[in-house]
Amino acid sequence: MNKVRIIYALALLSLSCNNNRPAFDKIIFHTSICFGTCPAYHLELDSHRRIKLFAESVPDEKLPMWHDTAKMGYFTGIADENKFDQLSHIIQTIGVEKLKFNGINCCDGSMIRIIIYRNGKKTMLASMFPPEKAGPLISVLYQICGTSNLKRSTKPFNIEKTYDVRVQDVRFPPGSEPN
Image (cartoon, helix red, strand yellow):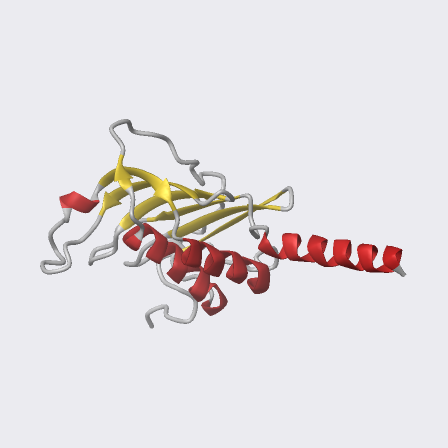
């Protein structure tokens, strides 16, 4: 009877440890500027909650057509535990391996590029118009970029680029072509 209890306890402990494991090894998030007030962020977040952020362009909250230079530059720090857990949960439930971005790169909007390293695989996503299903993922990544308590870095650093993501260069999104 004691052996059964020990095995049961070990199984529960193993399951609880796996549930606390982050859903990704590393995530890279790039956004581009637009003709409006889109911030340009370049974020790297690893499974230990370590953040590297290059905030290339951040609109001022009061004067959106101006830049908030205090929020621009290179920053490092640790992600908020709740936001990190929220991001991890979204990645576990959204099915990122099957998520499809259409690769469209046109018009006036921010180009979203995401690389997710998970379970030994690399998933690359890029589009100016990501699918609705990706909304929560993108929203939390923007929140991490904009609200994390980070320290300014005195040294620039590189964040992995997404050049090998294939994007179409079309003039209009499908279905919105002019007559």
